[in-house]
Every structure is written in C-alpha cells, then in structure tokens.
Length: 300
Image (cartoon, rainbow, N blue to C red; front, top):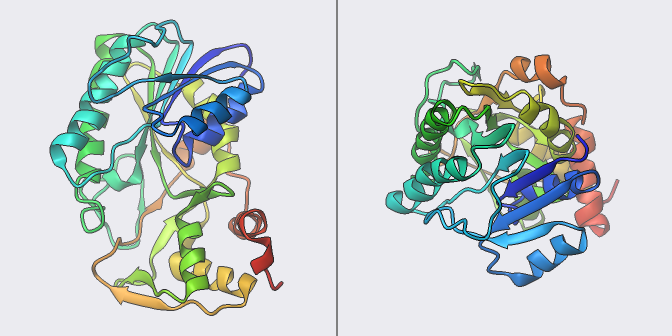
C-alpha cells in the first residue's frame, strides 16, 4: 500500500503503534488516541505521523478529517465497567464509522475472545460466540461482540467496505502475552495455565500483522467480511514458557487453575486465502523478542 491517507486508532497500544510506524514509510498516516502521555505523540510525529487527540466514547472527532482512504481501528477499552466498555467499544466504532464513511476500507480489529470456549478445538469464523475471557476480563468478550454488531450495521448503513479481524495472541519485540510470561519466569512467578491442559493458542508475530494488514483492509466488503487474524501454528503456554525458560536458563513454574483462560485456537484458512500464511515461526519470534528486550538474559 502506497500513497494512501490512513487513520490508525489506538496507536499507543501494543499492536497499532507498530502498524502505524510500518505504514508511515509509504503513506500519509494519522494516529488518534487520547494521548495522555504527550511523549508518545511526540515520538510518532518524529516518524512523520500526524497525531490528533480524540475520545471514542464521546465521539469527539472535531479535530479529525473525514477524508481518509483507509481506517484501521485498533482502539479498545478494557475496564471492569460494562457501561464504559460498551460505550467506548460498541458505540465508539459506530461513531467512528459514521465520521469516516467516505473511506475505501475500514478494518475493525476484534478478538478471538468473542468465541465460546470449546475445549481444544480450533475456532473458525462460523464458530459459536461466547464469553471466553470472562474469568480474566469480565467486560471484554461481551463489549467486543457488541462492537462487531455495530460495525456490521454501520458497514451496511453507510455502504462502507468493512473487515472485522478476530486477532489471536499477537506478540513481538513490542511485547505481548509471551513477554509477560517471560518476565514472570525471570522473576520466579508461577504462570497461570488452565486445568484443561494444555492451554493452546495460535500466535501471530507483529511482523506478520504488519505484512498482512494492507491486504486485509483492501479486502473489505459490504456486508462486512469476518476473518481470524492469526498464525497457523498452535502452541501451548506450557510449550512457549518452557522454550523461553530454556533461552534464559530459568525453569518456568506453573499455577494450574480454572481461574484463567482456556485454549483459544484459531483456523486461519480464510486469512491465508486473502493474504497468505503467517511467516514468522513462533520460536524465531520469541527468541527475537528476548534478544530485543533483554539480550543480557540469554544463556543460549
């Protein structure tokens, strides 16, 4: 993708920031968030990214243009309060799509947290929806399902080509769940794993997110297209923590409990048909994460 005017929401988050930086090399990128930490906006502006403060919950887009070619909506509210998160995640996407209705494509980043837990089976886009994140983030699954509904409505109401991506366990040198586990292993803190073991997920490295995002948003349709956004390697927490432990010379400890998430495996065949498979092998990605974040921890 080149020469496009692109809006990225939620750039202060783990995934959206690197996406904005990646696209800024060949496009006019705008980033919008509350930017309570001014230094983050300053860093983006140094990369040539235009930063604008906005609030999805209120729909205050007064300082935001409405002539974007593409919109990548990653912003997400994660609080314990249902009213706050339904307003920001659900109503927010509708208000943003209304403002940006002239776009050629709108990507709404959802989550595989919208699926109903199903033992160790891989979720397809047609799998039943549910509340699989309740035990850790009580508002998350429900508010994200609500946001998908609003995005589907807005795509039809505004004839705005839309793609809803259900993202599964992103990670990289910028962080992610495996990075939190790395810190826990280093500190000797037990890593929670579900009693219904193993706890299997389908990781996707930030490089693969960056590489596929353009093709995915360009595939947006009316009605909205839905696809799982993940790699194709199913890896358990137990497995990746053991590998991380080997890299830093610390044996991980595990806390086996039912008060944590169960397996969330995804079938990414629909994604592969559009943009090809993920390319970063999980071991390569995790090793790079350690090399970039804590090279002094490596023992092999």
